[in-house]
Image: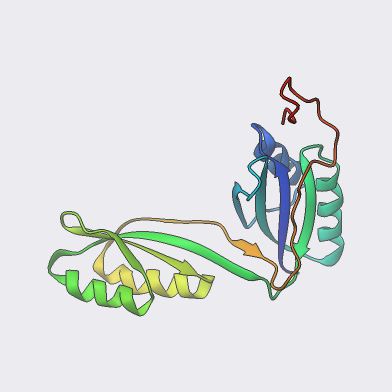
Length: 179
């Protein structure tokens, strides 16, 4: 089994996340991370799902996803795709404010809040960089932290772009799709 990154373009509407996540759950597939956001076309969102799976399992997942009416496109991204995650860490600063800011610079972390006796850093990168940053911050006292799921795009000229739905949807009175 190896880490698989699945990029899924879905219609941007309520309930889609539940339907996609439900498909994974009903079939006993475990999601390692999930990130969802709008695309350049606001009618569609893009989900990035990571999971540990062999080739047979990943083919089955893609087939099942393709059966969902809200899913417009599915692609397993190659291992060399551009990937990033983000972590926000609130750390106790005390007398160490300058030291913490210098450590943040080493990781190219941005201090997004310096209020009171704490600092909030945001840092992006691969899992190893984020773990290393968190490990460096632990001795200072992490007050809170949150990490996003992985997002990814395939390198090069290839694009998973959906211009319009693969289905015919009713149009409203202005002649635009009702999705």
